[in-house]
Image (cartoon, rainbow, N blue to C red; front, side):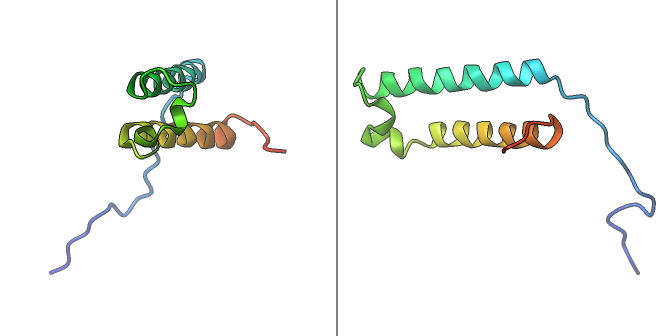
Length: 82
């Protein structure tokens, strides 16, 4: 007995990416990360280098999400890295 996990035909998915909204989300996430870091570091001048902020998982996940967005923009948006 053989079970198939996928179909025999090629399946293509297409989604619409709203580029202005994606850029707005990237910029706002960056601002929110800075505000969050300032709040946690009690308004120190080097908030992103504060010892609790370096190892904060929320900041790390948000920065990683921004990096993935940047990869998407470079792949599909036509931005050259040169």
